[in-house]
Length: 374
Image (cartoon, rainbow, N blue to C red; front, side, top):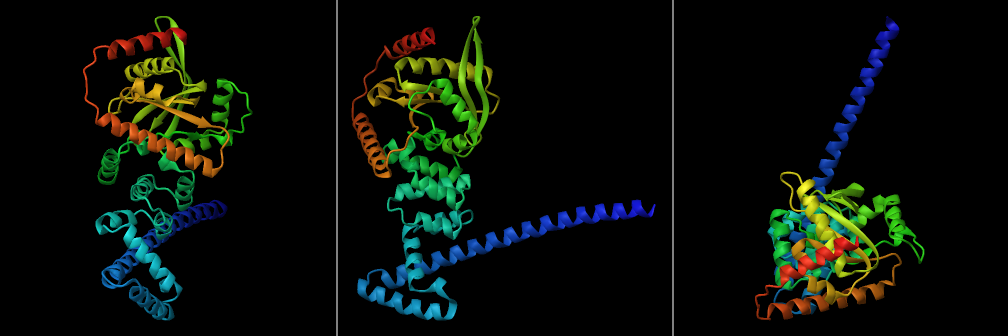
């Protein structure tokens, strides 16, 4: 009896200790988060005040001298966190994020270390993209740094849009946490982690992606969940197979991924359109948005893709790289692609629209050709 009682007491003590420990850890986390937010707010307020009262409409030499003197005094009293170098960083922080209402929303989720990664970004649009995506998807500092280094913004479909549309998308993200395919889909996708040799089949590519599905999900982006491989479709007694099927939680959409080891062909669009319509009819649940698709291919001709106007069908054509070029080469290639895409968008926006009765017929021909060749 005594032995049973001791066992009960030991079990109760262990459970109580564990529960109280979890309460303590939660409280510590909340305190640390609140302290970080308070310090970030203080840094912004200091930077904004120096920027307004010392640097605005003043000679550069005078302003820098004031910061230097104030920094030495504050450092002597409060430590290096408020020295001259830190004050200059706070001013840069206030300059990069001048709207207090917007930055206050950000610092509820982002810590000072996040902002230190964001402030050096010179392009305002790029900086806002990373800040808002970091807030919505709750990236760690390490994840944010990796996203910036891999040039995620330049690889998104969003970066190829005209500035006006980019601003509209980012505003919807900031105000409503609205995540769209343009924010999520990339081009190219970096699949160097697969370690594939020069010659491989679509089956090899698919198998490699599933062997390292965790890293593939990270490359696709936050919010993706794996659903199925080789999803069977039965229509009129014939079987077809979707390579990979995912679900994106924030977009609330199923995402079809079709793999191609060669260059994108127009027939691929018809094949994937067929898949999307089947998924929409047979797999989409109430409350979900229409499914979308990514055609991952080894190469593509941009003009061919544009003539098909696949965005209206919810299809994104993207290249994948199994071997990474140098960072400089990748940066140059992405910047060139962004510049060309924006130039084409601007050109098209200024072209008079003419009605075309052949568009739907042409689309139908492509779909029939694609299905017959699957």
